[in-house]
Image (cartoon, rainbow, N blue to C red):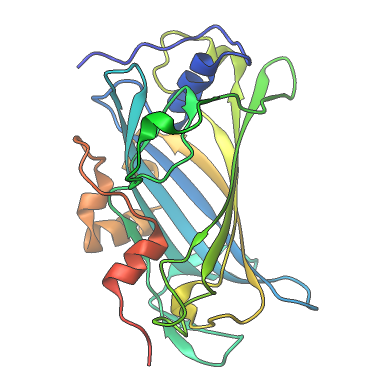
Length: 290
């Protein structure tokens, strides 16, 4: 399969250029190749009346493949993992853990790592304001041109910002999941920053654009912490980078994935599904704590 055609002339006002730039940063326009995104960071507890407290580390990676769609848009096929870790003395992510001594409850919790397979979506030249399992008429959804708030830091450095602010029915409803659920609605925000070089975006020979970036996330307490509706939430802070090989992941992360789920190191080659969030997977795979 030939590489997916893409625009290289930078035009912040063009939905198609924004789509193609986003796709080339996230993954590789050559369907024969997979792209690896890796995040390493800290989870910080935000509790009323207290200073924020780092309490967990995490390691995340995604393996991604792009496929062309008949309408000219791009399907992103993706697997995603999050491994929770201890924190080192300097506050950096440490070793992957299976139990967590919860400083807020005094309990020891069983850690539930995230294995999202698949986590697919469409990269379109219009914003898609509907979940993957939307059962209505997609043709009637509003067609909002895809335009990102790019920043030009200097003559050669651009920053792509992709933020999502969500408030949706919680897959873990409190009636069934009283200890795991943060309440009837799940309030989640994702904030990504991708730092790229102008000359890379303009290079027609690069089917994937190198980047360094940051990922911040605001979410309820992790369900396996069994903190229910306790006031407060989690703030994730991390750095991220793209690469072309899983061999560039930290060795302990790669070894853990190979030992437990080696299939997560290969991007999908076909568009199977459905795609679910980590909360939806938790609701399907776990049972309520006593």
